[in-house]
Amino acid sequence: MRRSNTRAVTRLARQPPAQHRQIVTLPRLFPQPPAQPYARSATTTTSNTDWLAWLKKASAFKTSSDERQGGTALLFAGLGSFPHTPHSPTPASLLVWEQASEALLTPDATIGYFPQNMEEFAGHLRGAVGIRGWMRGWVEGRSLDELMKRPDVTAAFILTSSVAILASEQERSGSKTWLPKGTTHLAGHGFIGTLTALVAAGRLDLATGVRLAMIYASLPPVPPGSEPLKFLTTVISARLFHSLSAPPTDVPFGEYSSDYAESSSAPGQRRRAMQLILDEVHALQNEWQERGPEWAAAGIINSSKVCVVTGTQQAVLQLIERLQHLSLANPVMDVHMPCPYHTKLMAHAVPKFRETLSRALFRNPDTFAAADLPQGTIILDPMTTHPMGPAATSLIPHLTDQLRWHKTLSRLYRPVAPEVTSFKTVGRGAKGLGVMLRGELRQRPEGAADIYVEEFGVKAVGSVLPRARL
Image (cartoon, rainbow, N blue to C red):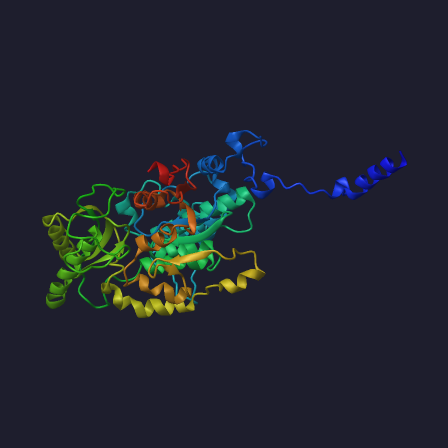
């Protein structure tokens, strides 16, 4: 009996303690995916433990506007957009309108700004009528033709209205800056839109911004002492597509061309609609160069199907007639512009404008760490399609160079993993930018990341257009 008890004790001693036993199970070798963010608890059913089934459920899950992955880009309207009467004023927005209105009536010898022909507005500010922030009511009761008789005031109004919208949102959210939470990129259409982006990002004060807007819109369209010429700015669209948001890009000519090129390509290739239009523009430019003084150019490339031609009236009409005869493009609308911007016809204004910009005080983004200003926000340069360099020199090409709006935005949404997954058009004046952008997003490949286009600062929120539903 003693020997059997000894054997039993020996067997128990040889076994390791229960707490040191390690049992390797299949779940440890093949870990399960994390719990679904919208499920209350995990279960052990087959449908939930299957890896492929979980991936399908997770891919179908859509996040809200605040939970989206990727950055947000704000798009600002430029000169030529239709100004709208502001609505739903807040103390913050009214303060912006008041500061901008006072700045337009106050000289600034630093940048050479001296108010001219502003007598009709000076009485409002000095108490004759008792209305401060007079510029807020500039649009009320005026047609677009009447507004563009004073393009300088209208340009300042467009900039101020966008900043006032941001100020109202800042007041509502309690943010330290004018930029909403999650904003990573800013893009403005043309000089006025880019100037708005600089003011919104804190790189330029509001007073200097509205003054520069007035100076830009007050530049002479011809050199001093020259004979006056009639100029015309017209939006044209590819003839095969009768909408600013029309679907396909290519026209049935020859073979396929390179992907992102917006210039001419070799004959015999299948060229994009915009390339064919630019071919005809360049051909006519060779004729105008020899004859003179007529001239026109595709000053703005808004999308793969829409561009803006600017120049002398006869040259623009000749170009439109040729494009219609070749069934390439149709005129959409005339845009009231004070000068033939984005063409070589404005070369005479470059020296004086360069001097004005060199005197303006632009803040360096490196100094933002010590102030309550947005850090890391990228301002895009629609002339180079890349992040903006020194502002004083980057704004000069807006007079003579082509505005490549389409390519600037495409750099954000075309990559497989886009930098920006949400675009917000600020104000009703920028609605057209969203319409054209939605048309371009329809050309993205199947399976690409969702891109959202929304209206910001308007009563009706824009629609959400995921790629899968286009």
